[in-house]
Image 1 (tube, rainbow, N blue to C red):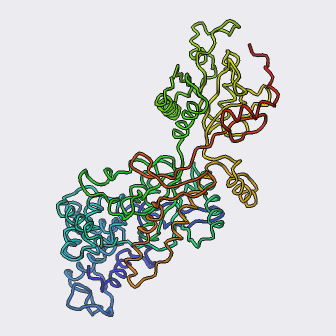
Image 2: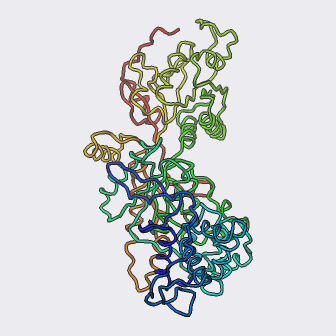
Length: 623
């Protein structure tokens, strides 16, 4: 559009809205709610309400001469007397277009509906946008609508049609946007050509520059997942302080909502121009943010244990050039920081076969999606290594009676009460996924029915208990009969490690409490990202635009370098996750219980030697 008239358009909106106050700054309609936590993150703008039709004065009073306005163009005349209807219509159309291009589609749609009628409104608005704007203007408005409005594909298509004849930058970015948006009359042949040409030359900068040293943070600081967001923030800020790097954090609250996370990510990328993103936490929010990060090639370390498909098939049709493929580095822009429960279950299966030498294993798991997922992962890995799943039993987590499930494990048909001559387990170990409360409820009942835990290494006729990270709680310890002694379970960190002890000291000095395993993963993720951001630096150069764009590419390059570092969760590195994406890969830590403490587990031989001098736990009264 003709930008010298921007002042007139803004004043026209005041007249059209019949109010004396300034219009708020335009923002995406799905901006996140602000938070009022003690350490206040950056506040998002106030979300817009439903579209409000404009009230157009019958005889508008036009402003006086505007400096720089062209009397021969479609702008206002130099007189403050009432103008002819044709002139006033041009002025109000321009004002409505100004509102639209600032993100307030509702205002523009309302004006066109009132002026031209509901049936013609959409066509008139589209025609006005095509004839009165250029490609750069159309594409500049796209971030305000991407992923949240039907206008995203239309804007991308029109920018593509107009832009290829103007600048390669607009053509290439419009092509990518058209690929990602819904296809609404967009010819994709030109998009393919533009992307291929840009990829071949590798000289076309992104339309949105990045600010070096600025990191966006997406966390659920309010809502049902608030405790995870606040826990992550504590670990993040402690890691930043310990690193000594000069990094600016810009917080946005996702409230655990996928739509808010998507809108917040767009705002961080296009408005705040962050160099990288840390977060979010939940799987649904992460899936939405990952699409945006991969599309715009923004280095993003997510704090979820799953991301979704790394391939661009969700946003780019098969056969089209991958957006991520345009990055100079080989690492996927979205890096998963947390190890999933299924990965820990697989690690437990491996140590059961390779270190403990267990062959025949049974599984007792809750009848839930999470329980079935853990059981399936454990079974697949154990069988891959030559082990055998003797039996798998699912139980109702809400059921008060646990006897039927145990009888199913032992293949007892008359499930009344155990006898000394009753059937004994035909398996060497039992995989029991669940939290500490679940374990404490089940283990005594198992012993009552004759599934007696192996409380010291090498104890004959006993069943080795195997667990998950949910066991890593002090309440799992049985201080009576010591039924959980010698159990083996995996988690992402061991408090016994030297680096972990350093974190615990720092954490206790700052917050007067011990960090959780989740906070240990956040600490390592923050340290890895901040180190990469710090390596890139400010990148001062005469070509400021190119360098600003290269900031993100350089960070991706740093993350993708084949190197490892010592974190509190162990030796970590960014590696392929086997699913087409990238993740921070620590080593699994195996823990056990001895007496009244949870500690790092040694090898089977070392455990046997260590515990040989300890008194054998009492047998108790179980049959």
